[in-house]
Length: 532
Image (tube, rainbow, N blue to C red):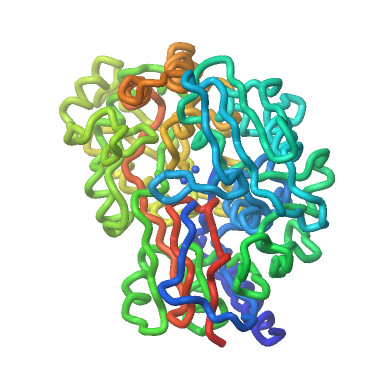
């Protein structure tokens, strides 16, 4: 183990050196900056005997903001480690279907205004406290408390904190002001990990106590590695299979791959697309690809010139060659986007196909807005090589916009500083978001009270559509409201979403039991085992 630690540390230092010289990619969730949890089952039954520590390479560092508190989860390193410590009422698979976890079953009244959850008995927290309904009530009321300042307040806006009550020790009831027919999936977000009643941010930041499969060991925000030991009292018999798991942050993509190919790490959480052909020819490596997942976006403030002119926003959207970006920036590992958080291949999409690129139409709109050869439009686009394809997409957009006489100055900086110092601080910037159910995805960056309203989209009519959708019982009518909201963002909003990437991980071929989920905050290692 000491040999592995020294070797991986050397690789990390090499990666930092390469990154300083050339700017290596790192992956992040802005809100994540923004994916959703399947329960992977190994093709063969895991070996029963104790397994050595799993070693996982992550692609983004959360820095000093890293925490075991669930209240705000702005980056992927934190999201992954929380998934080891805590559990939720339900777990979400890659098709956005909820399955029992700490809640064994649930039902609602006919009006969908009252949801009752029956909790699993015999579950304990890491410190021995029994898991009860009081913990669930505390968790959700804490997320909704404005004094706490959780990012979850925007996505859980349909909940009334006073309506969350413990019926008895193992039963919780959510009573809402209006119908919420999709409540189980809407309350399963990246923040709704169950914490012990009475826990505060000060308690949890370095000493997270959950019911999850692994227990943190001497956690510090910035350390290599983050170690988590097997929970000997985990409620699922025989799980987790591994004795422990260690997480290393290796931001430079070729260094991550080198660590995997040398056997010094077992899993790489996210690989750069350019390295996939090499990995696919290596018999010692298995490449794991998700379906439609994380969006790559170009976001501008709609209340700031020149983006406060709808004609400019629409023209910039019309200039995008989405297929070219998909094939070049993502090497085909993704799907076309339609400038809203719901991809066109979703059954919830407002239209199944995106209009073709229209340079002439864009130039006409720009002329109407006062921009032509004598007065060309010039904008600064801030970005970083922070996620696979992110920088390449920005550079390609600049080339495509130039065909209409638009100058896009692509301004790049260190990936490690981007989310803290640049994103949401500049009027035109690259971003990325996890795939989500429409009820959450349409809210997290676009609802007026969102902490991450990166486009300054403060539209009351839009908020009203989301409120109506959340409280509409008829599924077709509810989908229609989602589609209206999507259409508003596509046609009027301040975001260009050319593509949705597929999440691609890689694993040693002598490991089993891990699957690449569509969301980075769903990182399940309970079934994962590697042969020594």
